[in-house]
Image 1 (cartoon, helix red, strand yellow):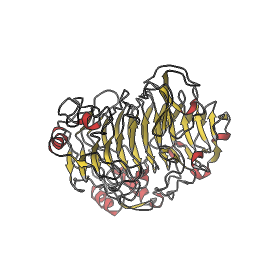
Image 2 (image 1 turned 135 degrees about the vertical axis):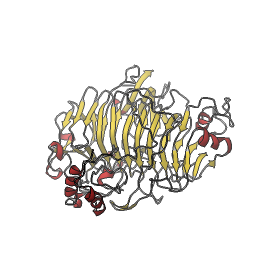
Image 3 (image 1 turned 90 degrees about the vertical axis):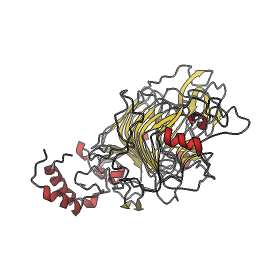
Image 4 (image 1 turned 60 degrees about the vertical axis):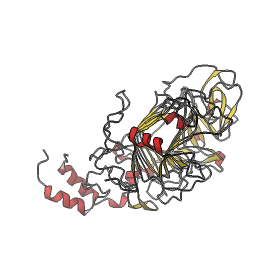
Length: 574
C-alpha cells in the first residue's frame, strides 16, 4: 500500500479545522465553480420558458423545448414535470433540484422522462447532482428518516416488457396494462400517453401507434446523482419510488446513483433492459431493489443500508424479484444478472401490510435471475422462495422454488423444473434467522428448508451462512440519534471473502473484474462511494471512508490517525 504522506499531512491539517461542517453540503459543486447553495436563485420549473400545462392532467407540465439546469440556480419541481419525446433535460454538475410537497398525495411532484425524451444529468465525483425535498437546506439538519416528502424520478422507455397480448386494459396490482407491450406507471392517470411505458405491439389504444420494442433505447445519462426524501404514496399500493424505470433500454447510462430516505422502493424496474452500476440505497422503508414485468438487465456494485437496526421501521426486502404481477406467465420473465451487492437489513421480524418475506432476497412467483458474489446481512430470512400457489393455478412448474431447485425436471411440488433459471450462488448471509425458506409472508416466517435443499444452497451453490454478527472485519450494526451516528457499520469484510470456484463476472464491456464477495474490496482506496455519497457525508459507515486522513479506517480523523502518521513523517513511500 502506498500513501502520499505530504498530501495526507495537508489533508489532516485541513480536517482538524473543519470538523464542524462534516454533515453539510452547503458548498455543493464548489470544486466546479458553483456558488454556495444559499446564494442560488430559486426557479420554479413550471414557470420556465416552454413549460406548458398538459391538458386533462392537473398539476402536470411538459418542457416542450427541453431545458438546461445550471448550478447557479436552485430548481423547484413545483408540479409534475415531464420531458416529452424529442426533448432533452440537461443538468449541469453541482446543480440542486428540489421537489415541492404537494397539497395532497395526488399532487405529489416528480420528474418524468417520457418515452423518447432524455435526461443528461452527468455529475462528477466532486460535483454531484442532488434531488431533494424543498425543506432540505443541505446543512445536515434535515432528518434522514423524513421519507415521502415528494415523488421521485421516473424514466419511461421503449424496451421489452412482458405485459403480453392484452386486448383490453387489465390491472396488474396497481399498474395497468393498456395493451400488448404497453403499461401505465402505477398511481399515475391515463389521460394521455405521457405516463405510459413500453410499446403497443398489437391492437388499438388511443394515442398509440403499433410498433416494436427497442432494447437499445436510450433515455440519457444519470451519473453521480443523489435522489433524497422521495416516495409519496399516491394511493394504497401505488407509491412513487425513488427511481422508477419503466421499459428503460440498455442504451441508457445509470451509474453512481444513490437513493436516500425513500418511503417506498428505492429503485423499481418494470421490464426493460437497462443496466445499473455503482448504486447506493440508504435509510429507505421498502425494498432496496425491486424488479418486475421482465427486466433482463445487469447490475454490479450495489450497496444498501436500511434505516434502523431495531426492527421498528417499515423495512421490507433487500431484493424483491417478480416475473409479473398478474402471474400470467408471459415472457420474457424477469432475469437480471447481479454481481457484488452488499445489502444490510434492519432485523425486522414482524411484517406489516406490504411486507412479504422480510428477506434478503424475496423471490416471488415465477421469479428468475442470477445473484452472485454478494453479502446480505441482518434480515429475517436469507432467500425466500415460492414453492406452490396451491390449486387452480397452472403452476408450480415455474415457481421460484422450481426454477431454483436442481433436482428433477417434472416441475411438480417436489421437483425442480430443470431450468435452474434462478441462480443464487457464492453469496454470504450474515445474521439471518433462516438461511433459506419457502412461503414466508407478512405474517409468517415461512418454512425453513433443510435436507437436499439446504445442501444445494450451501454446498453445491457455495452460499456461506454466518451466525450472528461474527464475520471478520464486518459489522452490520450502527447506533443513530437523529443524523448523528455514534457507532457505525462496516460493510467491508477483512480479509476479503473468497470467490474461488465461483462464477466470475463476464468480460463483456459492462461487468468489471472483482475477486471478492460484496460491493467493496477490503483494500484501502477501493471505495466507489467516495466523498460525494450521503453515507460518507453523514460519516455513517466505517471501512469505506474516502477520507485520506482516516489512516486506521475507523470512519473519523482524530488523534489516533495523527499518532499513526507522526512516526512516518519524512520517510520514503517508494
